[in-house]
Length: 252
Image 1 (cartoon, helix red, strand yellow):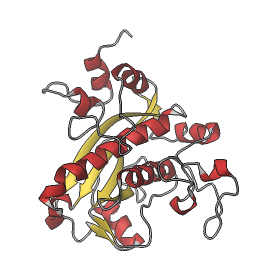
Image 2 (cartoon, helix red, strand yellow):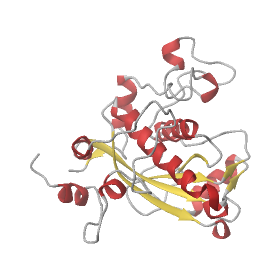
Image 3 (cartoon, one colour):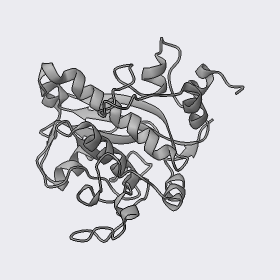
């Protein structure tokens, strides 16, 4: 590999003129540590060489925007952030199977006082208002994770989301702080899949996929999944559709 780590990070939009952490800036872990896998028999691992190669290929950038997390108990603060790091880690592993890299991941926050009540999402209208009211002016997908969701859904995204940050469909809801590690991670990746053009792989309620392979696909709704942890497969066709979205591109 001829490019240096610094050159590749610059290429994906990381400011390397200031001190950086490979785990925070290169992998997008807000805690600057590899997250612990919730399955205690598994050790989460990352490869810098693999990540640099994926940054040089077809990839997406993500803005993880946490909303109202300052109102969560201080005793759970590290765990709440680690769940976000695990969601990023798992999303990267899921998309890797169809050659879609997750390059730059940046973390942003909206305090409860500034959220205008959007730290608890109670309806589709509130989710859309959150995405309309807040955005990050860069080339990353805005993925909001809120304190709580009191609506009937656990995440929500436009299908084939916008690349213009002034567009109506320019953000998604990737889950909330109450979800477990694997539940949040699957919802986070599932909603990004929607943003990158993927629809549910079944007809919607009350239907579910009628094959095990379909139920194990990331784009099966959670109620249809064989397991929340393991139902994260993608097909080559889905990968091709994701790579065709304007947010997925070769940057380096």
